[in-house]
Image (cartoon, rainbow, N blue to C red):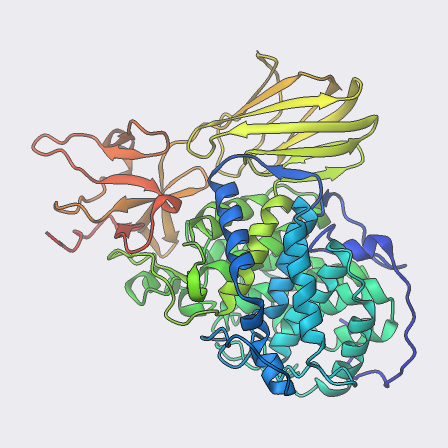
Length: 608
């Protein structure tokens, strides 16, 4: 790859060359465009025209929004004002933000901007503007952002870009001046030929290119594009150029290296160099085949692990199975890039897993910055607990993840509306012959059906396309109560093209039954119980001997539906009836014992 190895000379010549498609970029309409850029096969709705309907996920979104609105602006700005010698009411947030709010400030601006774009929430937009204006008062005339780590400025850059794209705030002057400073001074953290340590240090510089390319899309200054090229990471990425199972890709920081694949996607979008797309595809397959648990989580002890059974052995180690919120954010971005760049539905499967078992199973962020960090999948059992340190990185990605609920359910192309996730929601799409409103009502994944009702100005011919999950069997579609013949191949889109009219009702049925999923090929009998995209965790709090799972051929008769949809119980045994239930992982609250993984060849460690 022809990756620049030098920084461009400093220049004060800034020009505005807004490229409308680029401004939408891959966290939104996900590809930059320039003369040599790649256009997407399809686009998300760019945080527009999607409404969440009543559900657990809408409740999670609203609770998160209310939390971020509740945090004192004086506390958020305290450290910055104190450094600048300004009156500093309030107090620092504490935890990771014990000096100032650098670790999460830019992400909070980003999330607030996206929430405004998705919902029209004027209060959260106003708060974001007040925070930005308060922060601007604390920086010097040379626009030195006083962020001593690239890690922090990368997040600020994302926030400034998103405020411009999504909140109608003209951040271009601030973007230009702070980038001018950064391009002069932030060079020491590039270590392009040195493998990164497992901690992600120094500064996770290899994630920086993504937001630099996004800023280039707004400002149009070629120096920024060149500068982004100096933060590419061929030393790691090229391991995936010709294989999805490189021998030496392990022992690096998990979340940040997965996050860096978003920079790969942007490099491909900017250059059209197909090597980047090969790397992105192979990186995804590497994660799915060798790094991911049945939940979609990855990175035990925050590491990419060797493809030798280490993933399965990690279930005997610490509780740090998956850096959940940040890991979800990285997965959301990577799968959205892949889906839009390739048009393939299979990448939505991981997004769906993370939606339910990642951010959707996280504990809510709450007072004083308490938040969830690690999911615990240990074979001896686990519990959800709050991280001891407050206001850590997952407190920043949390708001971005919940805002993204509006941007991952549907995609669009000129003649097609795509249903990616089966979530209660409504979307308005500008179809070939006028606006189309699709309302999706469902209790999936606890039930097997999703009902879509259409409304439009006039009858219109277009395609509805539905993601058929890779695990699905006997996927069925009916229109207005009549079964229709749709080619529904697991891992692909099911197409339904016809002339639609107001009142048409489409029902999708995706049969789901619990199945055993091995943790890796080296541990075929260390399994999780999964139904559809959802990991079922077994109650571990009941006062009884822990049950052993049966042999696979006996599993269907052993685990049977409970009265409540989505929950399963153990069939009465000859001499005992178990109280324990298998429930979706997202139903478990804090400090409630559960078991996700089970050994078929070992008796569970007795508790009672």
